[in-house]
Length: 282
Picture 1: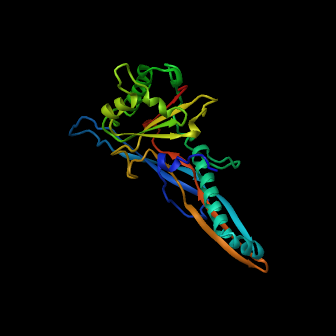
Picture 2 (picture 1 turned 30 degrees about the horizontal axis):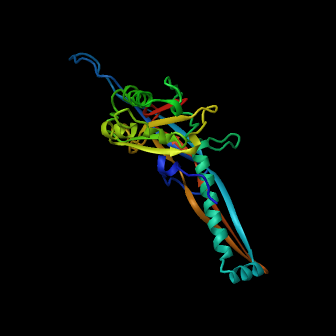
Picture 3 (picture 1 turned 90 degrees about the horizontal axis):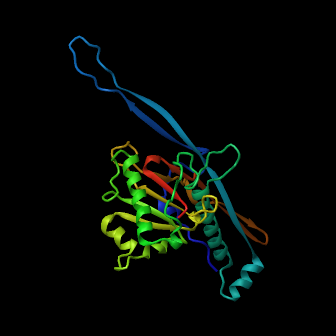
């Protein structure tokens, strides 16, 4: 018995921001303005300025508990099973599965603003893959798709991102990642080409990207961070998690006891959309 791979932490990391009880997480954005002009002795001094905006994300909380009866615990012990321990482990796993799901898909609670890796409103539109699905693609087709993605990052960032030097993350559908092994007649695989010419590219697969765009497989390419683009460290993505696994309380009852656990997440936040390329139809 196994559950699907949980890739959100590997893709975006996990930022502990805020607390379990917070209603929202707010990101301050400051844009610097001003333009230099030719100097004159009698001219007015041109002035710089700054504009401030705020982007908020809603925190959602989940809970899962356990109840163990006296007879249940005693009988489980006879077959060498810690009933409470197994249920506690299940709580932790299920809360992590839920957090991972929110990290990819967000959470629709009416007026809330909790988004995920696949639907953050800041994300750029998908670009179509012109070379066909990878299941029937050649080395040249797949290589061209990746070249298009890397070149797009360089162009849309106005040269701030250098894909052959900067740390880049390539996220592929789980069903497509092994097509990087497709090779030329001379034995050069896409994977080997990638490591030779783009050595700082990190490849991660996620089942959530299978059929993510109306049934079409998608890939993401993004710069892990963009230097000199702010005071927040430059991260392209953050996954905001105020609380990962928190005990809410324990209740002793006449015939056993009950425990309740919770987590809190604000989903995924794309902070630099110009550092992301999304391609559909692979």
